[in-house]
Length: 110
Image (cartoon, rainbow, N blue to C red; front, side, top):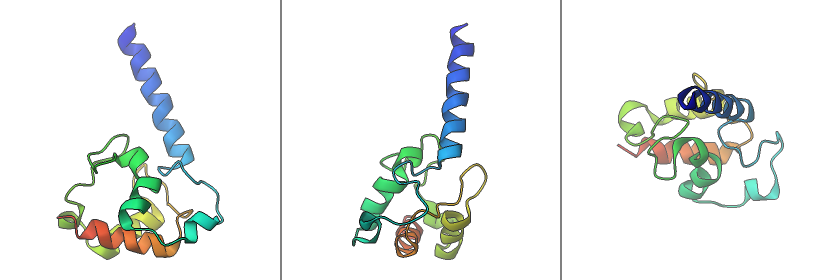
C-alpha cells in the first residue's frame, strides 16, 4: 500500500512539474525586471533549472546535466532550452540572452 501511494505521489509531482515547466520560478510569458538583470550562468541555472535538474547538475525530476557538453553542442543545448525535449517543456519564459548564456555554460561542462 505504501509503495502504491508513493508511486501516486511521484506521478502527481511529475505531472505538476511538466505542466508548470521545469523552471518553476517565473512561469509568466513576459520577462520581469529580474529577467533582464545581468546574471551569471550559475545564477540563471539556479533560478530556472535547478528545481528539475538539481542544484549541482545531478538530476532530480529532470535528468542530470553533468557532462552535457560532451553529449550536445551549444546549439543543440540552446534548441533543447528553447523548444523543449521529451517531457521538458520549452523554457520560453527565460530571456533569450539568458538562454544563450546557459547553453554556452552547459556546453562547456564536459
